[in-house]
Each structure stands twice: as structure tokens, then as C-alpha cells.
Image (cartoon, rainbow over all chains, first blue to last red; front, side, top):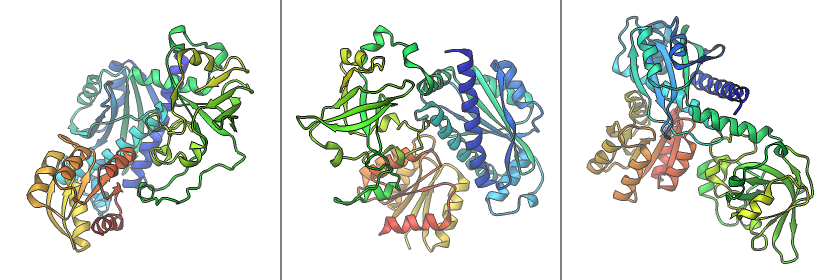
Length: 351
Length: 119
């Protein structure tokens, strides 16, 4: 991973997360908004202090950790004055009428915690989007920090190597979103960016990777509907997809929108995909045979596990890995996996 | 009118949901602040409808839902989730939840979900 790629990935994560938090914040605190750009700090020690510099204290701090084995999370710091006004707004009162003082009642703290929970959930969703995979979060931990040093110490304790800070205004009070980003995320972001930009001819697969079986499927189209509607779909109902008949079909390899092409029917009745466009390489002519019973696609459109019902996929063309449409589900055997690399425009890719 | 158990780790959300339910003519028979308490209170109270938050300490809403459905396959549970937990929502509905409401709540949506669960 290059330093540039890492910076691009971090910037992308910082921006999308800050935007998501801003939207969630505006749901509970109309008028709240972002102030300035996302700032990246260097090294946890120094960055932690920079992140909380000038923050009014005491401040309510909501910390949401990732739970998939990586260190890091998101922290939102809101001075008590702003927290009190936010709680008042959430309880249907005027934020301007909120009583003054440094203590928050249990209900006020709970209201602020809920607002922060919604913001942090939105942040996790945005993070999932950038990483291209779902990120699970723990329930938010709420505490009140009374000094800048205490706030900085809390951030340092995360030991996350990358610290991104965004300033917000909430009820006329300056607040901070601090993203504590683990290295694992930077690597995943780099991979996601690579998937969008790599010229495959310049990055050949290593010998070991060539033998790794990958899952390949074709996607006819997508639809969005409420989960309840999908569960209530009667047999015989018709679901409209977002493609026209003449539109190309997308081919996915292990979650990556790898190519697009045209469906064909082989002499034995099995479906094939003739690849017209390979991402990152204008390459046509390869044929991907979808070894399946004749026309399983017609009977089983990408609906049962339709990824669009869930969080919007990060990479616009990539469905969530856990919910791959079961259109053509087969592993490429080692020797065929090697062939699948789009370096030769005339290879046959059999799945 | 239904007898409802309200489960959320945030006291504010419990109050908010309870206020909406009371305003809609329902009876809030109990509250719980985590999944463990939710299962215990369900057994004890046997409410007609349970509103269940997803992200909670001790035991999350999805695990609590599975236990409640195991105890009472006819349980009517409405899941409550923050934005970004849609995949959990779908999982919950597969596990037996009747409906879900995404935070921030609209009163009508909460009442509608309870009505749907009762129907």
C-alpha cells in the first residue's frame, strides 16, 4: 500500500463518515452542521491532543468501538452546554430555554446518548460503505470528561494509529467527531480503491493467490423495496428490476464488479456470459460460461438476498459480500482461477 | 389497546416510546434496559407486543428476540433500530419479528408498527 493510497483512503473515510454524522445530527438537532474540513493527525499521541484542543469542558463523550477484532471506533465530544440544549430539543422543548449548569439529569444524558447512538450508527454505516463490508459496532459508552487532558487520554487509550477530527456546531456549541482508524481499515480501503482503479495488467496475481477459489456470479438487475414487502411477496408476483432487456449483465468476482457482458445460451442450454467490458482494461471477447440448469436466472432473480434492501453498498457496483445474489454460485478451480485474470482477451472463463 | 413491553437501553427512548404508546391508547406494562432483562420481563409479563431495541449491552436485541420467540413462538415483537442496522433488521424479521421502526421515530410509525403486529 502506498502512502498516497493510504491518505486517499483515510480522506475518503473521514469525509463520508463526517457527512453521515452531519445528516444524523441534523435529524435530532436542526441547524447543527459541520465546520471546516476533516483533519488528519499524525500519531495517536499528538493527534489526540490536537483533536480536543479548544474543546469546552466538561463535555459529554460517546465512544463507539468496532467489534470485529480491530482497535478503534468513533468518538463524539459535545460540551455539556450543547448536550443540554440537544436533550431539550429532543424532548420537544426549546434548546434556548434549557437550564444552565454543569450537571445533566439522567434523562438528559440518555437523550444525548441516543442522539449520539444514531450519529455513531450512521458513522458505522458510512465506514462500512467505504470499506465495502459491514462494520459492527458495540453500544455507545457515555461519559463526561472534565478536562481537555482527560479527553485526550481517552483518545490515546484507543491506540488507533490514525486520528481524524471534524468540528461541528451543535446548538451554537462547538463539538468534535474523532475517528480512531485502525490500520486494518486503511488496508481494506486501499484494497477497495485498488478494485476501482487498478490496471490489472500492471498488478499480476501472485502464484499463491492464483490458486484461491473465488465466487463468481452474474447480476441481472436490482430492486429496492421495504423488507416487509419482500417478505410478503406472493408466488407469481413480478418484481421490476432496474435494467432494460438490452442492458448488459454484470459479472462479479468475489464481490468485485469485474466485468459486464451479454447473456448467451450454449448449445446444451446452459447460460453463458460473453464479456464485453472488463473493469480497468478495455478488453472484450472473453466468454464466461455460467454452468447452470437452463434459465435459473429467470426463476431466481437477484431478489431473495437482494443487497439493495440493506445498506447501500459502498462501491456503487458492488453488492455486500455476505449477500451475494445466488444466481450462479460456483468456485473457480485453481487452474481456472488463473485463467480468470483478465490479461488475455480471448480466454474462456468457466465457472 | 395492547399491553406493551418497551425495551431499550436508553431511558430517553423508553420514555419516548412509552409516551407515544400511551398517547395511542396502549398500556405500557413494563420496561427493560437490556436483552437479558427483556427476556425475563417477557416471561414474567407476557405482553401482547414487545418493542425491542437492537443495539444493547449484555444481550443485543437480536439474541433477545430469538430467546423470546423460542419461549413463545406467537410473540409479537417490533424491532427498533438506528440507521445503518438494516441488515440486522432483516435478520430480525427472519427470526420472527413482526415489523421494525427506524430511529429517529415518528409517533405514527411506532403506533402503526404496533397495530401491524397485533393484526
